[in-house]
Amino acid sequence: AHSQAAEEVVQAVRAAGAQAIQVQADVSDQIAVERLVAEAVAQFGAVDIAISNAAYSERESFHEAKMDGFRRTVEVTMWGAYHLLRAATQQMLRQAKGGAIVMVSSPHAYIPVPKSMAYNMAKAAVDMMAKTAAIEVARAGIRVNIIHPGWIDTPGERKYATEESLRSAGDFIPLGRLGTSEEIAEAILVLCDPRHAYMTGTSLLVDGGISLPWWSLPLE
Image (cartoon, rainbow, N blue to C red; front, side):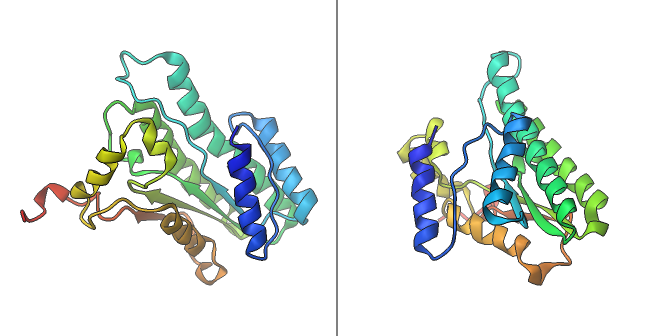
């Protein structure tokens, strides 16, 4: 799935003068994720940075939820994050020169958004697994940090929102608009940058202020 979109990313990276390869894997499959990390090592010789950003969500009331979708949400969003964290850490420990891991979590980790119980649960687990890992591997020079993106304008948002509703969503955000994938990527770069090597176990919120009391915005 998404092979063409992935290839477009590969070509964009190469056009920018860097190296890239495409490797497909279902992150809920531990062996597949371990193979993904091994492919990266085979191609580039090492894994210095790892970003866990795969997620899946079915939005239903928990007492009416179809269990296949509920479990799939947890398998991808929580177990997928763990599998990447585990495999990348093992490789970094073998290399014995540290590394940086970023777990893409969500304000859902602490805001109980209705009809998103499975996703809320999974993201809360991602926060705790990242902080636990940060303690366990700190002496090995491996930094594990968390990013909490707010409402970001991505193709996945179209699953439950119309273009019109996305355009008006900025009314509920203090900065007046949805965020962009590029802005989240820039924040992830901050967490990975060796210049910020004293940051580990931290959570970086990039949400345009939506976690603030947006209902108190002045009326225009």
